[in-house]
Length: 411
Image (tube, rainbow, N blue to C red; front, side, top):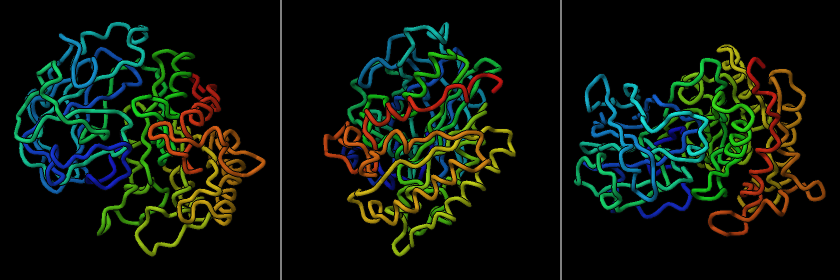
């Protein structure tokens, strides 16, 4: 997950009222049980915790990782303790992150075993003292659980009763690594809400990256992993400084977060970059910020690709799906559509990318220039959609459009 700012700044989906669970938007002597779906299983793993947007040191202890059963419960006997430098606690300074010691997941045998497909890992940890601003990823599209404030370290508990609060965000935890085959291909998908999964199904794991992941594992088994580092509201080049005086909903620009979210990820070899519509529409920009011109977005894409290529990564560009007639200010205008098409023309014709995926072609109705009708209704909240974000059907089509040959070993 890509951390994006201090909670509650962001664009969550179907978020419960968190005022009782996290009074004052901070954690205090309570346990989080975050549910994540590893794209690749392994018998040995490690966790990454981030305090990127905190203002004070955060103490984590009572950390465990076990096989998720349902709700806030674990499969009995699978919960493994996690340490940091052989200690059961760690203190993470503001702006920093920490990797845990490697730990064993005894229930994982063969990473290709059918019984592990789609299973989730529950990561439990206590924030021991008042945290101050919480570093988070707003749109998890997955339900996780919290104990009450001042309830203490409860990560060892296998049952559900200790975790009365639910959330649809991830807090502090921004990475899970496993020991993988040496020749594994690791793909990072960086982008905005269309990669983050807006209007996909809550707990459905049907973002376009999920669809692509299913196809990749069917083709290549445990020798491939796809990491989703999309952030709702994110831009390629804006805002110029983060954090600004007022929290920016879309987090730091792709260029600013590239090192943390892509280049520092273990084993990354390929990147799919689908982003730019928020630069053109500016829905989440500070008041008075003018929409970006195509040249600015293109310059940002060039700068980012150059940095990734310098690290030896292969980069696949994604054309921007349509936003014509979107009811949000600016996004639905003919002017934004013209500038979006200009960015897409660049993505299709430039030599900077190793390849491109034509997401526009699979999501746009050629007769109207807008999102196909089938892809419009929101798959979680049931509203009519916004002609900007695809739903489950649209994301399945996007995930099916990616040529798997880009990611064959040695490609």
